Length: 275
Image (cartoon, helix red, strand yellow):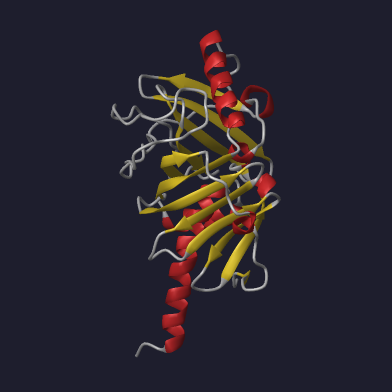
């Protein structure tokens, strides 16, 4: 006989699974996310592969991202699981790579607000989507469409992965999440981060940032920008176990004024997650 306690446990486990998939998006170096992924997903070490052409459009390269007509959700480019990126081989960059990194840095530094839609692909291939809001420096909000109960909110110093259904949230220092690079007021990728690869083709300019932490391991953030319009297209967070979460963004608008209250972390109505 199925007991109510068993039903509650199953619901809690399922909700925590959804929460951990979101944790992987923003905390590539967090032990909790890695441990969860290790027990559920098959291991892989990702890197980008060429994407279908014809998905670029919008503002001119280097400027703030503002698009016109509403776009349909893109298909995220899933990194190739067969390729590993040894961190020791990328010690120098040629003039073209440095120029590409400088262009990306200028674009990211030019943004103060950014609003749009996103499609997320988790380590198990599950796909979710929703809306996101960025207010630099350090503030972001991801609102996942139903049936997902998850919100992600950063207030400039802390980041929470919130479960609206369970009224719980996990809190992390923003300084320990790879999203801080996207949320920096000004950034020079070559000086402020450990860039291990810069590549470009007809569709994307890709920059891979690597972080090593003694107690946790190595995590990576792969940023991909349109080769034609210079706009942010997607990013992939790879945790120390090699599990990756990819987000593709579209319908970008950098002209909207955002309500500061939407980045406030609610510690009254949301408590810590059990266990």
